[in-house]
Figure 1 (cartoon, rainbow over the protein chains, first blue to last red):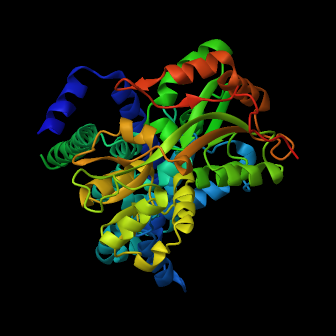
Figure 2: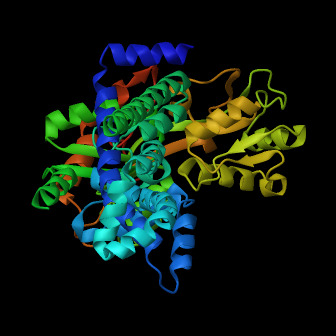
Amino acid sequence: MNALAEAFRLIITLDADLFEILRLSIRVSLVALIIAAIIGLPLGTWLAITRFPGRKFCILLMNALMGMPPVVVGLMVYLLLSRSGPLGWMGLLYTPTAMIIAQVVLITPIIAALSNQVIEHLHQEYSDTFQSMGVTGRRAVVAYLVDARYALTTCILAGFGRAIAEVGAVIIVGGNIDHLTRVMTTAIALETSKGNLTLALALGTVLLALSLLVNSLVIGVREYAVKRQYA
Amino acid sequence: MKHFILFVALAFSTPTLADTIIVQSTTSTQNSGLYDYLLPMLKKDTGVQVNIVAVGTGQAINNAMRCDGDVLLVHARPDEETFIAGGYGKYRRDLMYNDLVIIGPKDDPAKVAGALNVNEVLQRIMQAGVKFASRGDDSGTHKKERLLWQAAAIDPDAGSGQWYLETGSGMGATLNTGVSLGAYVLTDRATWIAFANKQDSTILFEGAPPLFNQYGVIPVSEKRCPNVNHEAAEKFAQWLLSETGQAAIAAYQVEGKQLFFPNANVRLNSSIELK
């Protein structure tokens, strides 16, 4: 109850630190989501409609990667971006960019695997039609994506949910630096370790509220669009 | 497509300032609020923007060995000396000290409050069959704790998972665990004083010489790591070691208690140069 009151207080007083952290959380996860969707959606679709040896294995791998622990992703990206790592010269470690990269690695398989299932379903229905119309290759991928756009919002939301909620990867590659790479989840981890459990829970409540808001927005837009389409 | 590239470039770009450094640090200095207090003053005096990555001492040293930091601020003297000997650090200076304390439930089932020394404390804990929560993460405090068990001729690993609980986490997380389980925990005093979830636990043993806890500051060597911002790192270290910095450290209090005691300027400074 105290946590809820504290959460309200933070929001109502427009607490500057809170909104800075919240902004960074949204920025990092949103950019990661856009990049992951640009890679993941066509990849998942393509794997659903083409046939080649090893395709089943690719899908299996993609599904397995959904269960990749964020800490492992964080560690891999850390070793890659470390100043003594192969990409160290770019100076990206402990920046929001590093966090975006880690989240892209984390959620691309989720978006690809979930969209793959959606499109596979559709493909069973449409494959003959598309074949007779001569729609193949890149055009087919685009056609499927456009046609399944409403069903795919759930895949996107799942990716966003994972990105905004994970702490393991961003704390390693971002370093939880105040005013630079501190996001909601790493702030929650820090406050927990300081024993400020009420504040930590309040931040968690704010994060939950954000997630609720994003989901309502996306689902609202979807419902509206569907209604207009069939009206 | 052009717009997309621009968008990505904008999203990725982070302003980097010439006078920005990364400090690989122990957690106690962050969790206790010391940095929040010192860094604005340091920035005003030196213009250096300091980014703190607070992890355990062991991880901080490892990160710095991979050149992922410009300065190291930790508390594990032997490891710091190894770091210097390996050529990773320019020099090491004593910065400040505080002490470690043993906390536990108020009713003190192992009766450690009356113990004469640390050895006796640890023996009583083991014999009473009460729980002890250990960091288990190679941090400065954890390394110290291992040495204390060794000095007491006890092998806690024999009771690992039974009475000796290695959390593998930071000080704060270990305190949360320890406090909830009514376990005994070795913690630095600063983190404990600033810790907000004490519940029924309190300091039961303190003040013995082996519990002395020295913090050191080490600028990372630009010979070993050409990427370090050694000028700003030097400014950071020198400000902390200066009279202004030392006075600021002494002035920091939580709940009316001083948390860190500056000792950079003590005569016979025990800091080591490259041997």
